[in-house]
Image (cartoon, rainbow, N blue to C red):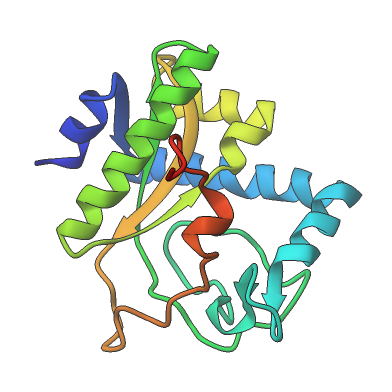
Length: 190
């Protein structure tokens, strides 16, 4: 099923920034939001706590951080914390996941749509990377709404989508917590 249709089933839209103008506007919005976030000490502290880990099982391991941003849609800048040891696939296409409204229900719908889009993309052999910066910085969010979505909908996040360009795909997995650490059974065993 096409990714746009998958998002629509969750009452969201997925708009690809495929022409030069919308692509550049999305890139500028992501870069601006990232710059704004890096100015906040609490953001830098949280990033340092979760990224570039060598010895712990939690967070993003240093080996999963891109050595440098070469081309394609921008990504989070992890250079504040650690140097990457393993280049990741470079993706050229970006899309914006948007909702009709901007309520708690809309945010829940965006999460459900994101999950469905990412799973569908994976089933098709595509690689993805959600970028939430545009939903976190009002100026960037407004820029995407006007310049990429034509004033329609409320952008929640961007998604880099593309084909892997490495023979090592899939790359090394990042560690995950045990299910028992993050989920409690609704009905404990008797």
